[in-house]
Length: 232
Image 1 (spheres, helix red, strand yellow):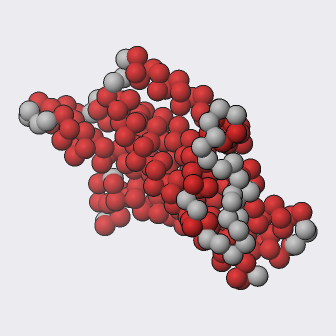
Image 2: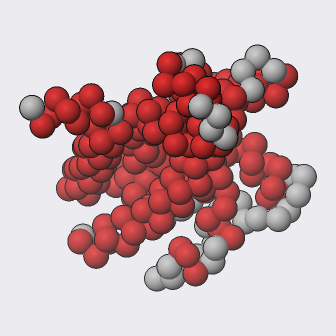
């Protein structure tokens, strides 16, 4: 069972790491850009688009992407995993695109909205206004003074979305027949393999705890007040 779970964990980790590496910077950058353009047409369009994506379940996004990119409109990508038994999932990179893109589109809207809300509050603060009055370039004001103070609250949302990946990946992997934790969980439930279900549940729970712990640490490091209180 250990060998089986090891291969499933590695396959799912590849999927989650790729999705996180793409989603986090995209969410932060788009949320910051939207906050800087508050009230404009581009801000309203991005906000509306993120609301629509946030309202869609992951399987709906996956089906729409499969229809557009794999079956009906453009036949560019495989609709299901093409890896043969014993073959690593990353040996055939094209099969990773659809499940990774589905996960990214599911978690990015929440990151965008939280980053936008937090950045709007930070941009209205006194220290940001003082930095602008000193004549600092806008890019330096955003990335050196505003964004670091917004990281703490945003880190909590990012952690929640990454923790969701551990559970939400079950649906996505089943949809694309991806040989990871999600597919293993579905197969174990269908086969009534209690030991495998328990082991997979513990792995997902441990991932959830670790991600939230990392988010709390980032929140403390990003907030000078919390750092000062912790030292005292």
